[in-house]
Length: 136
Image 1 (tube, helix red, strand yellow):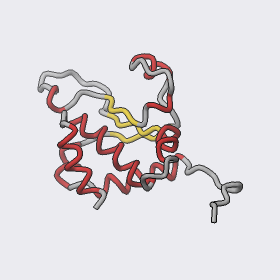
Image 2 (image 1 turned 45 degrees about the vertical axis):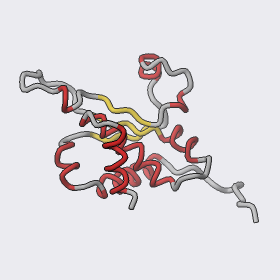
Image 3 (image 1 turned 90 degrees about the vertical axis):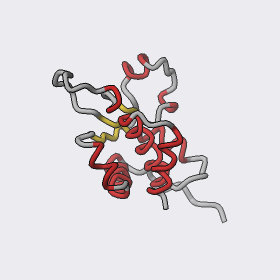
Image 4 (image 1 turned 60 degrees about the vertical axis):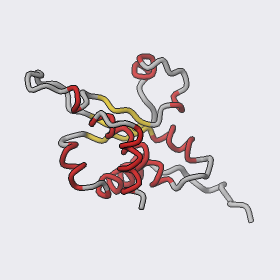
């Protein structure tokens, strides 16, 4: 029997924030401690200037972004700057989720881990190992 989507609504930004917080809470405590004060923000799409900077024409192509200086590039002599941030882009994630291959919470966790992994300067293999601990 097909699903009746006529009265369905997309999960809101607040729902995404809850999914991101749930994923964050499932991360290993040592990982969260090392991430420090990374700020997680949920927005519908990346800002136009970000898309332009990354040479991305279609905002649906960017599901998340780490903005800051990764730990492997920080120095004690760095001047005070903006906090490190992870952006999760709701509409792009929903578009990817629509293929039906993954639960929405798992996809949000995947994007979150991947972007926080950039904060640490991790390889894709490192991020996959962390993610397997979250989605279990």
